[in-house]
Amino acid sequence: MDTKRKTIFLVDDDVTNLTIGKKALSGSYNVFTLNSGGMLLEMLENLQPDLILLDVNMPEMDGYEAIRLVKQGKHAGIPVIFLTALSNEEMELKGLSLGAIDYITKPFSAPLLLKRIEVHLLVEEQKRELVSQKRELLFFNNNLTQMVEEKAGTVIELKNAILSTMAELVEYRDEITGGHIVRTQRYIKVLMDAMKSGGIYADEISKLDEELVLQSCQLHDVGKIAVKDSILNKPDKLTLEEYETIKAHTTFGEKVILRLKEKTMDSDFLEYARIFAVSHHEKWDGSGYPKGLKGEEIPLLGRMMAIGDVYDALIETRPYKNAFPHENVVRIIREGKGAHFDPVLTDLFAKIHNEFDKISEEVK
Image (cartoon, rainbow, N blue to C red; front, side):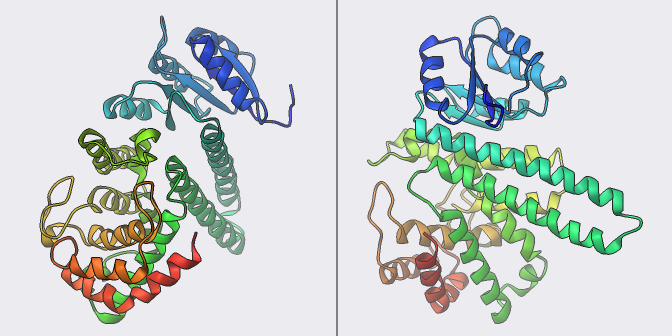
């Protein structure tokens, strides 16, 4: 075994899946194939992997029972990704609640599987570094104020890096929309700056923590983790059933963030993230989803992201459409004033749309 490479346990009762998975991963990782949850628990007594790929549907001990036993013992810190051929929102939320960090639908694409694993392992490295930095902060807290401040800055940077990597993980689910999260984050920054300088929605804006808003907006599409790759990357028009699945990413994203809120004290940040996730597809006239909110019933953050998200969807190439010219996108958004978009924010966008154009050109 190459000790310089990360180690992955691939657990599946299907020999074909084990063979395909090992072939896809062996070029980059040490891979151990195990055909049952029981064998996984036995193997963990002798070797701790960096990541576990775990099938959900197995005889005797299914994936849910296996992860429950792993997470209650000394191996609780090992990240687990579920593999499944059949999935729905309830199943996936159950798995995430038990401690899984992602779902991958079978049959899987080898390049996408490798990229998803790469991103998750990067997140784990950053989390370990964050814990190390926090320990140093506690150690030096009483005597070295300057060092604490420096380390605190590093912790914030690491936190931002973890959030960005989590957001990138969602973006890797969609092979077409590269840069979407970075661009929409910058669109929100431009809108906030213009609102502050123009005194627009001044009371609401003054109550927002801009830094947390810009961090949290990266998670507006976190619910896409529950949407199958075949739907996210479908080049043809979606069926009604597929479109309903896409729409559900808003409510699923809210559920995931609410679960996180139960386990952390960072409630302001996660509340912003929840609002972005659940409300960015609402429309001013009440025809949006998931709740059909109307006018200022829609949170301001959702109304802001609606403009940034639609602008980016139109300006970039998607599986079902070519990129629209900037002038056409501006016209479409202006025509949506009072229907899709907040009229006040639409007028503001019409004044600063060139800033959006610059961002779309810079971030690819």
